[in-house]
Length: 235
Length: 232
Image (cartoon, rainbow over all chains, first blue to last red):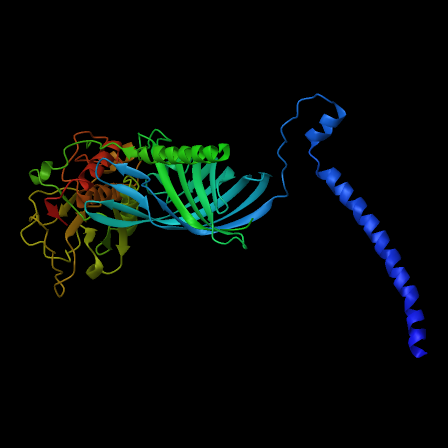
């Protein structure tokens, strides 16, 4: 008796569940249709609307920018080589950076990056080496990144290098009046993990340097090249 | 297939760009000639301090004429010479103890603190720089008070050697005159073993300028990058 009452008591609940399930299913079907319609390429829509029109290539869709962080070190070629035997160069420079990236296609991303580093300056000549102080370099760049393999991506960018060094040392004492130089860079990233957005990063950067004032002893501008190696975190 | 070809093209383009960057020249500076022969007074011998060296200078205030400040004159002269070199080849630092000094600058009227042995060249003037020109390294001039020390160059200057009329004509004070003399002698102490024939140069025999000229600067920079016959 008690069992039958319990069964009757459960019955309305059972019907309510079925009703709700049916309603949910209908709503889900509707949602799915809406999603499918939303995902349909615009070119396809236009084909339907204007039969016989040529399909247009899909325009790039910019995803919401993501933040990436970088930490590593930079090695640089000489800032100047004087024919009298003196070379001004930089030691290993710790570097940190941040960038905003947006995906424009499944394999292509655009990134805007800022990176800064501080290097000890070594002056060499006469078989000796002495301290030249330290120099800061801040880089800004806009880059295109292309994924070549699940873990590997190449990137190339253009931007500027802003170099500040000791005011009593060439070439900085002459270049500090216009420390911003156009710079180009090429790089590659290799995903260290597929589950986390951690990647090893290698970037080669180059910018022209020298001959900014009449008094500048560097009469022949040259290219300063840097190799920046580190890890990047962020999608 | 097309995708693989695109990736290959990208990789090759990147490698070509890296190779192109690597092939570019570094910024370079020409070797520049001296303003005048820096070895006129040393029989062709080049002398200088090792590059990158901090040269300690003791400015001796003993017997200072009233109104003179030899320490200020040395500081101004050191700053003037430091400003004309490109690569921090030396740093000049004032010290308070003659035992820690590489160079002593004093008034002519003051007794010397070091034994200059037989190294003093003949003649008198408004200032004189003395060191022993022995190859390959100049010996230490021992301190008279207890010996030792590390002094290699002794400089004296005569506060009254530039006449009042000359100072007035040039618009200089007597302290300016002292600074001119000290800066000139510091030029000798740094490696310019010569006098310029151009009276506008600081290293002219009777200088009247507070700062090294472009010719003085070029001469010092030239000396600093020649192999020295005598190391200070």
